[in-house]
Amino acid sequence: MRPDVLPHALILELRRLQDQVQPLPFAKMRPVLEKEMSGSLTEIFSEFNETPLASASLAQVYSATLRESGAGVAVKVQKPDIRHNIEIDLNLAVWVAEKLQGRITALGGVDLVSIMQEARRGVLHELNFETEAHNQEYFNSLNPHPEQVFAPQVFTEYSTERVLVMERIIGTSVDKPALPEEQLHLLAGYGATSLMRQVLVDEFFHADPHAGNVMLTNDGRLCFLDWGLVGHLTKRLRYALADFWVAAVEQDADRIVKIAADLAPVDARPNLRQMEKEITLALREELNFSINHLELGRAMLKLLFIFSQHGIPLSRDYSLMAKAVLSIEEVGRSLDPKFDLRQQAKPVLRELFRERNNPRTLLRRSRELIRSTLSSLQDLPAELHRLIRRLEHDNLTIKLEHRGLEDHDIAMKIAANRITLGVVIGALIIGSSLIVTTGIQPHLFGYPALGIIG
Image (cartoon, rainbow, N blue to C red; front, top):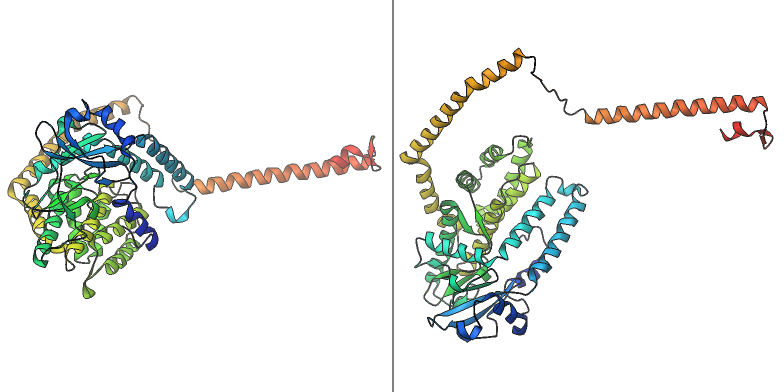
């Protein structure tokens, strides 16, 4: 995903993990199935192919036929003991992050420990296939264009935390399309428009739509697979993201800095001028319209990195969003070399603009503002009365704290210690010299021993 950060050879190796993981023998997978299913495999399935259709790092997928309905299904089975192994790896990763935090200058603006802890929670969350099933059903319930894109139907009565039974999808990878150019152009638009709608309108999106998770079906639709990793955006974050998006396309670094500053924590003190320079450079590198170099997803990732370097850490879901946009751009270009994500985003941005600025929304915001203001005014007399009572009883404490003097305090303590040590050493030398002149016993090398030792 980040050729600007990782070497090309390593990226090629990592991409193999999308669909080229060595499968485990079915003999090792069967105990998981039999433990999770409510009955034996022969009672539930009339057919079950023990050769996996796909093998990934967490699970393997098999084709089968349900005995009751005769429906063809894909059965996703979690690998045995995978949770234990992953927890060990992730605990080690958090431990390494704790050791690196504060020791590497380049990571000065990054809370590495929090990032790893968040990644740990996200990965362990993916191990619950019931959550994945819920995500697929939720997307299908929101999806306005099932004739263009969809997620497989889930058979919840057979699905558990470690086994997911869903509709079997027949199709090909988006990497190997054999369709007319016009149809590929439409398909690329379907996938991009769907993701943009998920992010900007639905507040819920597939966070990992790489080529291994998007299938081109035989009936000319796109199917989004593997809903274990999803993102959620609040209304405020969605609106800010739309503003980021428009400002990035317009190369308006000043506007981006202002939006980021509004989202920054209260105690953040970013260098806005320096941040604007870095953002301008990032936009020129990734969104160079003169040579038709349009990498919107990578530009968003770079912006997030710049924000974090300046003390403005944004929501993890923003990072997931940028990753999702980068993935769908790659899928779009694999289908259509002339793919331009800006064109697919325009109708969704218009819909979001109407949502933000229609009279009903403005009226609701006005009511909320009036209600909040009235509530604050109602509490004000009681707060003032409480303050006056404390003044009457001499019970009001004002806490003053000097900031920025910590280094001076440390320097004064070090200086005082050194002066004290110097005085002690000087007194010891003078006292020992006086003892040497007395000639008292016992002697050491012909001189008073106490003086020599001193």
